[in-house]
Amino acid sequence: MPTHLIYSSTASHAMTRAELQTILEDARSGNAAHDVTGLLVYVDGVFLQILEGERDTLTSLVSRITNDTRHRDLQIFYQAEVAQRVFANWRMAFASASAQDLAAWAGLDSTTTLAATLQSLQGRPGQVPQVIVKLLDTLAAD
Ligand SMILES: Cc1cc2nc3c(=O)[nH]c(=O)nc-3n(C[C@H](O)[C@H](O)[C@H](O)COP(=O)(O)O)c2cc1C
Image 1 (cartoon, helix red, strand yellow):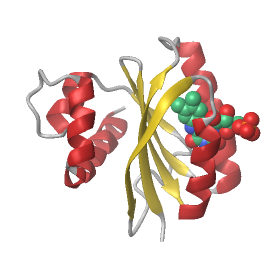
Image 2 (cartoon, helix red, strand yellow):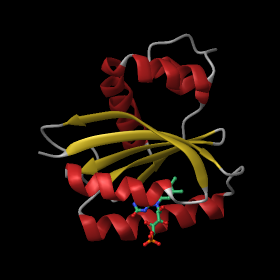
Image 3 (cartoon, protein in one colour):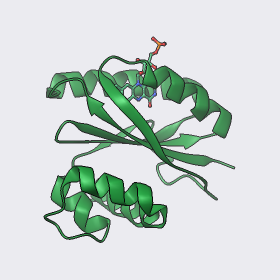
């Protein structure tokens, strides 16, 4: 059964497009080798990453990602088995979203800060699947 693992982390500095591109290339080559799929979101210096794969694979991947100096304060806040992958066609998709988008998708007032939205999702994991669906819509619209 595939597992979803979601974490947030703080970028070590404001990422340029080129730096984000390099991270995506690193992610895609690593994920192709380990049958991992997912989505990376970068909002205002914060990464939000949804990883999909076998549980043990994700555990070792996350410990590798945790040691990456391009970000810090990695916090896993959601882990659940899923019947099927949501991002099956993406070795690592990239979505841009604003802090306002994320707040609205989490059912919060759009003036809620990014930190408060993340905190709310951590406290109410039941909200996470609806945010995932919205992120998927964002990709489909691209
Ligand atoms: C925000 C972020 C997300 C990343 N996502 C992945 C990923 O999904 N898969 C992956 O293999 N590496 C990912 N990486 C890169 C890893 O941290 C690491 O650089 C890469 O796996 C190579 O590791 P190695 O040098 O130990 O082989 C990510 C890095 C960052 C900063």
